[in-house]
Amino acid sequence: MVPIDAVQDRSAPSWRERTRTLRRWVMVLLIGGTLGFPIAHWAGVSLPISIVFGSCIGGLCLAFKHRLLLSGLRTRISRLPRGVGLPAFYLTHCGLIIVGIALAHIINATTGLDVDDGSPNIDFFQVFSYSAASVVLLLLLDQTRSLIGNPVFFALITGRYSRPVEEQRLFLQVDMANSTALAARLGDREAMRVVGRFLYALGEPVRCHGGVIDKYVGDQAIISWRLTPKQPQAPALSCALAIRRALTGLDREMAVGLGFRIAIHAGPVIVAQVGDERKEITYFGDTINSLARLDGVAKDLGRDIILTDAALERCTPLAGMEPTKLGPVTLRGRETPIGVLGLPPYFTSTP
Image 1 (cartoon, one colour):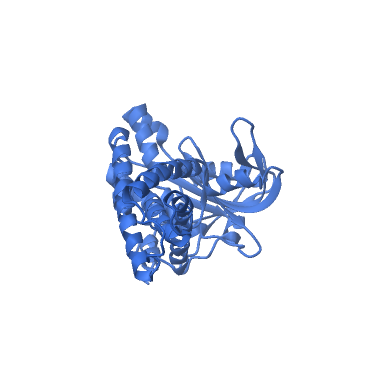
Image 2: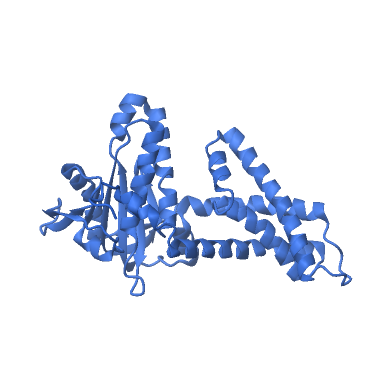
């Protein structure tokens, strides 16, 4: 009997993941290149040379921030105490700035951009001091973005949901199954550390499958994919299996008896920007209300991953795996029952 999660691992990384990684590299290099405009102004050199400096310096720093580069070191630094982690984080970026300056010199010399055209040479210390200050500001802006997520960040800037909009969404809800018992056994402070690790572990699976963590509610996370006529399905099933792997591995590491439940549902929702002092993108409608009640259904059925018929139609199929029908369920507040299915924990035959 082979774990189905192991079957999914054999096909990874998929072309979709490789394409997404390439897009992220292109994005960080383009954003980093914007640092070249002030360098051109301050140093008085040509814009192409300055953009190369910006792409190399800013691109490396942003790639490290988003775990495209030195991801293991990035993870280890993030787990350090704040008093040690922040200096280590900044010193690492200083090292990347130095590497970026050296790389930019090599590229400019190799491509023939760095020729004697009468413009002044770039001063190392001038570029380093500017880059260090700019990277700090860039990281602060990026930290603000990461606090609310990319889609919310850009939606608030562009005003996309300043007026309510109806969208088709595929939702995945993850809930820690035994946080109350953990708090009673370990104490509130230690239990909060476990919850923090639990929610942190969701990041990589969600990123790899193109989802968005919309919000955290206590020990629960709500993840979604926006569906369109050009993209009517999303890899929520594969994401659920990746989350199962990540949380199972975390439980082996921490040995605290970590439990979780995952519910997947899809349908129309009204998306709107709310709030004044603190703005937020929120969802309204029967779909999100039903999602909230599916955690109780998973608990009653003793399943770690369940999904509805509506979700199954919107999920990218998994080869060699068929969800098990668990029967119709009538949710509280609804008169019409909905079909519920469960993912098997193991694959029944050797592929």
